[in-house]
Length: 430
Image (cartoon, rainbow, N blue to C red; front, side, top):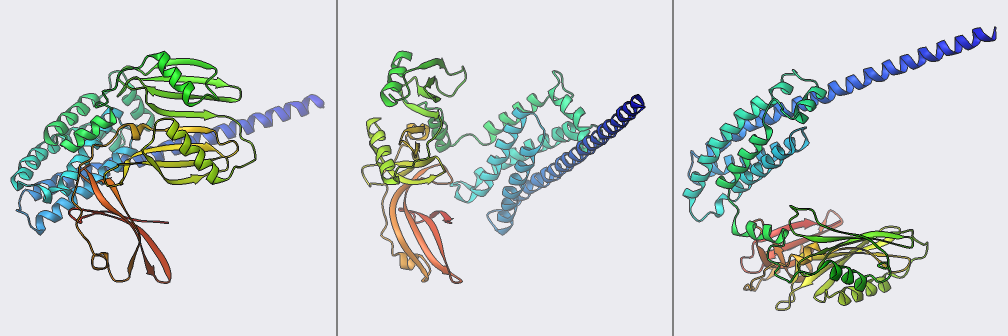
């Protein structure tokens, strides 16, 4: 009798497990089919919009500067942005999608900024060539994606083809072609080239420091945690700039610091440790942060803003250039400070290290009462260097304005070029 019950229980359990496994298998298959269908629809949508983009480019070549040209250029901007979003979310070869999104971004930005070109014929020359290249890309895209769009491949089959050592389609060749089109159709502007140099720290000409000097720098800045360095590594070949990656473990603290080989500048620092329940006053913590930055050699920064979580404050400091006293919002330092002890537990100075090259600029006298509508009130005004759409650093009036919006106060930052009085940016504040 007992044996029969045991057999019954085992048989019942086996049935339950089998049903569960079957159900889960069906659910997984349904999910894979749904995902495959969703990606197929997105690829088909990207293909259709690619056709539209090519058509919009061709339409702009029909007109001189007119409403017809402007509408078609607006379509280029919209469609290039839409295709970028689709490409970013699709399971594609990484090198291809990166190159493709870069090209789409450049063609959209070029169309948007066409009114600023000194020579209108330049637009037609560039876009005529871009149209030819878009035609090539459209044909290759259709060949590359037809398997998934036509439901010939399941999701697994598509991913296997992407990961194969010899995939059905040469994605890397297609990515290289797009990269070549980008370089020939839309070469980097002087401002973009400068921005690239800054990102890769190409203009730093400071003397190199040794590994031992980098470790000494770490010990000088963070004596409380630098007693036990457990590893020092050089950045990998191919990094934009060489740096020392120093790992440490001291008591309950573990973390790392990255220090550039050229000049021994701190790129970033992070420490992890348990936190106490006490919290020092914010003013004390801010003072500690400012004293640390001065001791570390960051003497030209001013406090800008902060936010908190339950264990720490995240503070932002901005470089202040001396001539105008203007803040340089591209040169910032992010600092994380523990509430319980005031220890610096995080630092990111990578943007500060890439110091912007600034130029003097005239400041037009402006009556803000005439500039803004009569119900707008300027409550704060300062000078700042900010980056415009062409990646140029421009001296600007950095304004905070308010207006009544149906019984509520709407607050905005408005950034106005001091020389041209162009509005560089308008941002609604919470």
